[in-house]
Amino acid sequence: MRVYLDNAATTPIRPEVLECYIDTLKLIGNPSSVHSSGQQVRQVLEEARESLAKSLDCDRSEVLFTSGGTESDNLAIKGIYWQRKAEEANRNIVISAGTEHHGVIDPIEWLETHEGAEVVLVPVNFDGELDLAWLENYLAEHHSKVALISLMWANNETGVVTDIKAITTMANSFNIPVHTDAVAAFGHLPTSFKDSGLAAMSISAHKLGGPVGIGALIVSRSTKLVSIIHGGGQERGMRSGTMNAPAAKAFALAGKVAIETLNDERARLADIKQKLVEQARTINPSLTQTALKARTLPNIVHFTLAGGSGDSLLFLLDQEGISVSTGSACQAGVNRPSHVLIAMGRTEDQAKGCLRITLGHESTEADIDALLVALPKAIESTLRAGLSSQ
Ligand SMILES: Cc1ncc(COP(=O)(O)O)c(C=O)c1O
Image 1 (tube, rainbow, N blue to C red):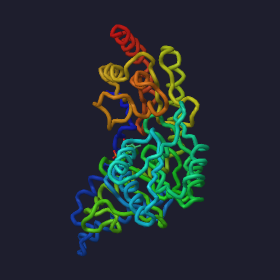
Image 2 (cartoon, rainbow, N blue to C red):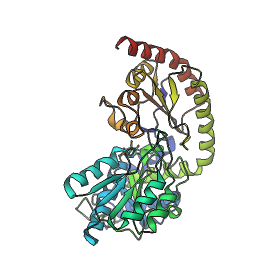
Image 3 (cartoon, rainbow, N blue to C red):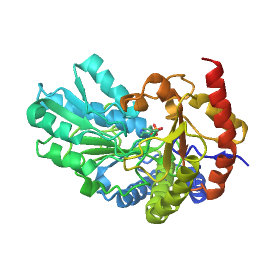
Image 4 (cartoon, rainbow, N blue to C red):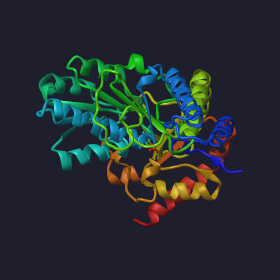
């Protein structure tokens, strides 16, 4: 049996979600059709919207279904930017951070290259925490030119959690909309949209036991954005394209289970994480926990291996039947050090030696025991290879 410890890349679909997904796929009808078949599917979609809204503590009208986190990030960032520019042409500053997922970084860089945006990055410390005092000073001086802020709720590589409420409190006093990528956070942290003060929030089903290819952008009723996909005018004209009702229903169920079990799961995974972190300390002094002083998610553990390659560690553990990662799956296969660690002040060499262990609803202590058996030898071989290549 393989040991799967890469749940931040994607989680196994929950059995009850799979069953619900397959059952709903059998329904015939386009949710926009007026006949009864279509309306039956429309009802499934709207019930899913209602249920997801409950899990997120928002209004059902604030849920826009998308194809996933990347699309939601693009819609929020480009959509809010264009809306703000249309209202006030001088607002071209987009504030974000170097530790964001590429789903956020790339649309922002695109706006910089093609739409005259000025990108401003909040400084990040060695532990991956944002310098919020810097942000406060920056906003005090430049707020009249800021179009939007996009800062993630929790980091998918290091697990570092951001104080979203502190950011929205600062930004909302200047009427600056804040978008957050909550793909890593939703289902792993309490994420009440109503209490957050956010303008928009991206989430994705496959990070919490739902299917790949469905996500949502939660948009507050007071936030306006320009659509980036044009066509049939579905999802209040914000996201054209036939809605995927079966996937929406499966997503809503995965979200419901994740929220209902949130406290117990957080405690269970925190115990497993604690065991891993304590044991890892005894393996080799070159292996250290990243973001040690920061508040992190209970399901993500990130290590740095000084003088070793994360890619070879991944390969050696894979041979032992253990799936781990070095960072974001979106960059897998690309032999580049993690931009997240670089933004946290690591050198390219330091950033190449990383190992990310991420837990999910199926993870057990036995998975960590298996990792702890294989890890010392894998580290030793990786370090030896590193020395011989010098
Ligand atoms: C923080 C974060 N944002 C966005 C995404 C992209 O989500 P999706 O795969 O649903 O497009 C991911 C996926 O790895 C992620 O971890």
